[in-house]
Image (cartoon, rainbow, N blue to C red):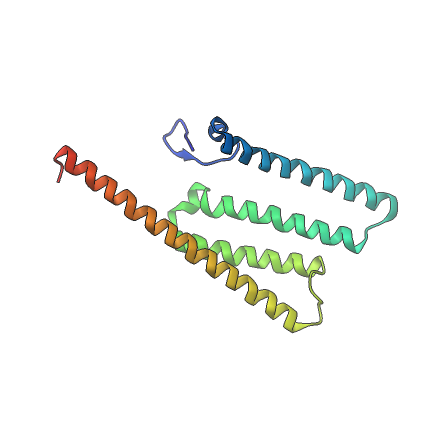
Length: 165
């Protein structure tokens, strides 16, 4: 992470702050590689559609790309966009989950991920999404709570060493 001119921590993958370490450079390579692969895949789908018409496979691919891009956009909007940061983390997490679920359902419907006439498939989709979302929410909550406890202990040590307590 780097600090911007106004003192805000910038966790943007394109900020350049991560390029100083091997792991950071690899992370940026994965992100830029995914971006290039997505652009190439979109170009191939458009070219194929122009030559031979849209197929179910192309629609499915486009819906997966749309879901991935929407997830990245929602993640940035709910967790890094400054106006959204006025909400509590739990509120932002809930709103991310709801908005992304709506997009995933739309992508699943348009991309024919599930049989449209089978309500059990859709119910299973919703239950699986909620299960994964619940487990990830609990894991992130635990990690953030643990980190908060560690930071508080370090701050208390610092204050004691400076005689501020």
